[in-house]
Length: 187
Image (cartoon, rainbow, N blue to C red; front, top):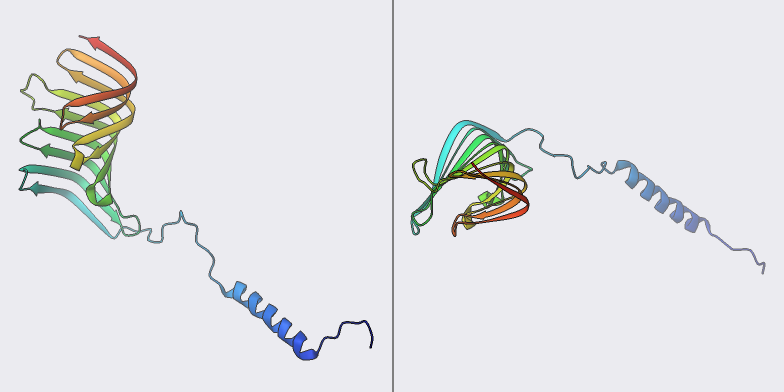
């Protein structure tokens, strides 16, 4: 017997068939889509000049919103609003009104991200304790009556103007926590 390896023609045919199968599988497979690509590039609906209200009858809380334009994308699970305003009416807390150039609503309304000329007012215009807030970005968490930002913010109350970077404002307890670079001016 010789020391050469012995290959039968059926075994060679089987190896070629397996390699050919893998090669054809790679050729016919659809190209992988980039995870950043939106499968649905067009909005599934657009609404203009809208307003709405959400009422919690047990706690007598009303949340109102309005926007010039609402755009929703099926693949995003995010709702985009242009020229948005939100109002939180809670009999146990001061009125809270927010306005922004844009807003994104995520997690079925649990998180709202306001961007561009964000303006917030706590209290009514005739109240002495009225507080105003200006920033370029604000994260609103309506169920917790909480707003946060890590951007520059200007707070005005009575004759005092406060500049800071970063803020957490809990309207339920009326507490404002300023994060850094805080300066105050008494007018």
